[in-house]
Length: 469
Ligand code: SF4
Ligand code: SF4
Image (cartoon, rainbow, N blue to C red; front, side):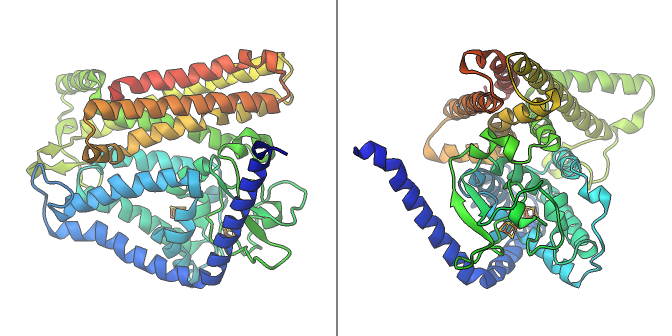
């Protein structure tokens, strides 16, 4: 046959060989991963603690001018964006291979109380709540600008991981599976990614959660159908054994296109919506006049009613109080920033829920299978790319500032962000199309339930417009 017909098969062969090579490498060296974790732990604690001994940096200091700006650059300019983007190419490799917090939680678990994991921790909404709290708290602390804020936030997250690890589970990572806000983000967007560990001998039956497994995140290995909770620790991999799991590469987006077969669930969909809203709110309060007008109006009201305490600064573990750096938040700022972000969270969640509900209802009218709620949950995943770009733009500003070093000015960087949005929206549209196809809707009718989905992506893009330009 002609070369173009053979090419996909050849590529599949190459990818399978690469996957085998990676699998073999980590199988041979998996006991040494602990050394990597130890080194990462020292580096992580150093990045958080060392800047605290050097005082604030000069106003326009660059990454190499002061230890605090260096640590800030490593965390917001390199670590966060690279880890976030890496999920598309390598899934949650950060979690299993590098993350010092998850590894530390597992160490404390070995010497801890090993109590049964309580129901409140297993509740699917727990990591969503933890994500929202950490995102808002990060804003009020001024975590993007102050070394002490960075140490307070990440130090607390680390402490929470150690305590949960110490208390719950038996040789498991209860924190990573059930509560980590970073793990939630990487796991949900990892579903778009190109890496999966799948059972060599898959068993039928519903996805189950079990503590009787070698998997630290409690995956029932033979029934594994989703990559969300897989931290890529390679403990279930044994290349020569007939059972266990095997690493394979797949087309990015493939898991979400067939989400009905991969444990679609409402908690993840709500995270896609609320995460987009929180990221938007976290950015817009800095740039929109509406926030300043609101602050003025509430401040005037507080003075009229003699609520003077709202004008007092709060504790530094709750909000930014750095008079030397001319940034002092007051209780008024604390409540307004939190309220403003929650307002955007509710608004975006309402808009995307409405468009998804309209899409699910219309899908049913043109032959879509399943119940309305089932179609709603499945179609909610079409927003994964748009939501991912939102988090990237909202929480990874350092990545874009790096583009200055490549010679791009602010206008050029805005265009890069806009192009990312356009790509995310197109990918979302494509996912919507494929999800509707999987629901059995004929091609000639798919445009109809696709319209509300596209409207939702456009609404998110319109909300980001003032932040980008
Ligand atoms: S889930 Fe969180 S703590 Fe656990 S390995 Fe991943 S990022 Fe680290
Ligand atoms: S499925 Fe395998 S690689 Fe993934 S977390 Fe569990 S044991 Fe580790």
